Length: 269
Length: 60
Image (cartoon, rainbow over all chains, first blue to last red; front, side):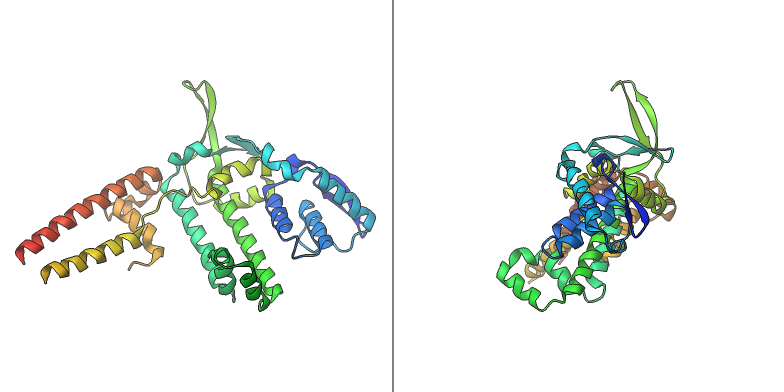
């Protein structure tokens, strides 16, 4: 950890890639994606705040010398290489508790309740973004894929009427919802477990204890504070790659039924 | 049409044969296994629907 002072108050900033938590990683990703929209120095200040576990825009004015030193430390993190270092652990210990991690090959071990819980949380997140405040237009533009169907010229025309402050609030709400859903997924992918020696594989395997919804929110907070990005990216990537399992397509079966009843009417005539 | 909020309960209810006391057992079953059973129900329903349709057409 790198120590620094702002207004005589001491703070610590992460200066090793292994120490970055998944929460910090996701926040920095968002800040770097918005490089064009915010002032560079503001982004650097925000990155330093994130890496020091402070709320955004709360650290106050920093001396340029300190700022340069911390910016250097961030650059040396080799942050862009994080993808290469991510590991494929099936076990980790947080605060003395053993956690078993579902790995990519474990999709068949998902309990109905676990999958349903993730689906419900995802649906609620989309509902919130769509219905919250006056965000429907942004939702349609950014989330519903309309942005891919229009030209850049049309996009800029649409954005002319947009209040940037309101739009940034939407982006931040979107980010917070995404982070929240990611940790919901992780609270299911990573659960307390016990180890067992597998005679056939000749190795120790970790098995999650019986699923319960009781501690999900507590676990979400524990993971948000403690889960390192290197440990969290892999179990999360399974869901982010779009493999969310299959769902019953009630719309299709409804259409099929309508088609059949139409045929029936024709036959009866 | 059924509200999407009820889709999951409908799925669990079908697997538990309408018996609410069996919901917890289904919740702790592997999801993949439940999906295969639902797929089987889907094809069974389709088959019986076709049979009924043929019967109705015969009688009309």
